[in-house]
Image (cartoon, rainbow over all chains, first blue to last red; front, side, top):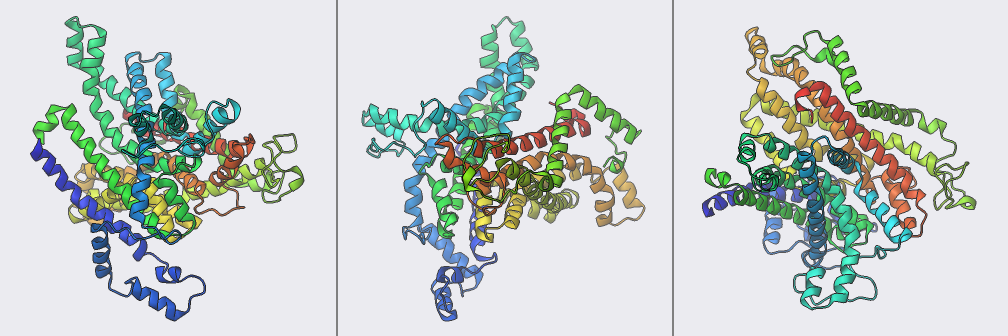
Amino acid sequence: MLATLGKRLVTVIPTLIGVIIVTFLLTRVLPGDPAVYFAGPAATPESIAEIRKSLGLDRPLPEQFAHYVNDLAHGNFGSSLSTGRPVATEITSRLPASAELTLVGLILSLAIAVPLGILAAVKQGSWIDHACRIVATGGVSLPVFFTGLLLVYAFYYLLGWAPAPIGRLDAFSSAPAQVTGFYLIDSLIALDFETFRASLSQLILPAFTLGIFSLAPIARMTRASMLAVLASDFVRTARASGLNDRTVIITYAFRNAMLPVVTTLGMVFSFLLGANVLVEKVFAWPGIGSYAVEALLQSDFAPVQGFVLAMAVLYVTLNLLIDIMYGVIDPRVRLEG
Amino acid sequence: MSDLTLPTQEAPPPSGLAAMVKHARYVIGENPITGLAFALFVLIMLAALIGPTIVPHDPLASDTAVALKPPTAAHWFGTDQLGRDVFSRVVVATRLDFIIAVFSVALVFLIGGLAGVAAGFFGGWTDRIVSRIADTIMAFPLFVLAMGIVAALGNTVTNIVIATAIVNFPLYVRVARAEANVRREAGFVQAARLSGNGEFRILLSQILPNIMPIMMVQISLTMGYAILNAAGLSFIGLGVKPPMPEWGIMVAEGATNIISGEWWIALFPGLALMIAVFCFNLLGDGLRDIVDPQRRT
């Protein structure tokens, strides 16, 4: 197992190198001179040259790249132009907000999509199968920012069940003492149930928006892979041996059907991390997505670059975790690896 | 495109166009939703082509006297905070959204499709380089990469087209590479080689026409995603500048009003966006059923 893990970790290295090269190229090679931009509109040619020198932009490209990698190795992502704060600090302090939102969204989505997919496969052709098909086709067509706004309109404006979409907590609550950065967990650790309730009520709509978005691929894949497994010989044998439906479906079929579903999770994470940016904008969620959007609109490039890099590293890590999960679910993968 | 389907080893219908039309009619009859999607597609095309000439109001003309009015007979979809007619804006926006999607898909089809075919056909270094580029792009969450590209290239509509094309690149490479790879030693390729055709000529005259049907399916499947991606970028304020009507930015403009109950400003452009994406996804599924019956779900 450890050797497999080691081998898999080695394959991550070229991917990470590629990611770092791309984020570097995004600023340096493409049109537009950062020095002119940093100097501002009232710059003279001398001051631009001065800035170019101080930014190291007069050096050859490989040398600039070495500097960039060196900075990254020391955890230096540069500083924001508008706030002056280092990008790395800002991203680390905002990451828990995004992570909490994404994880709760994913859990909600799995909790709905997996049973839906299983039921649709078991009762093929029934109304639940059709419902699954509608969800799978409709879900991928919904722009996530639009779903979010519809939910806000229905549950905040019309029904009044949800609080205003103004971030992680309403104005009357204060953040719990930071342990994990996840408000739900931190408030439970502090035994502050009032804050727990407040942060949960803020979280539920954005998390649900993300959940709806990722429902479709998970439900579709669960259904397809359950159908394939249910038609296989070992399920027929299990049924013929007189095992009850529950055991056959859950123990025999589902465990074998899970592998393609876990594979789909890689793609789902790509969607989720992108959709996160839009959902954070709709719900004024103070995560790294809204940080990047604010910076983008002020043409403040260092935060955007840091954000893209952080997201890519996060995504590569998640894919690595998914690969490790294969081994846990399916012993054959462990042996072959 | 059916005249491009030369009989290959695995293509079953020998009678060409007639069989294709018959099969298409059968698929549409079997699945009326594909028919519905096609009707929607015609509607979208009409709106994109003649929309700006038939709308009842100027999409840019503001009239503060009628600002923020719910839908009425004069303003079918209501008016926005500047008193502009939402219906006219939604219809006029169709052209821009459609053009962004078509151009980005055409761009990625040309570059990604050719790179993928070359990778699958030549193998070796070509394959390694193309696959490595595609893998690197896939290492990013796609929307996030698109944001970064637009931020770096500059905030314009052209760059939205380029960014959308780049994030779709791996999908096209993957499909074209796999399809070209299974045909590289096919009988008709060897025959062409034997008659003295160069490798590059075989690639263009034998391989490319043969994988066209599969690529057409890929195009219509990614059109929906291209529209969503572009609208998402303009929703966060990239690319399209106000007051230009575009669905994503119109939803963003209506977002602040939805909290105070003026639902129509964001709802109608959002619905238009949803219907367009839904239509392309259904068309893609339907087209796949016609071209590749084995992959029907």
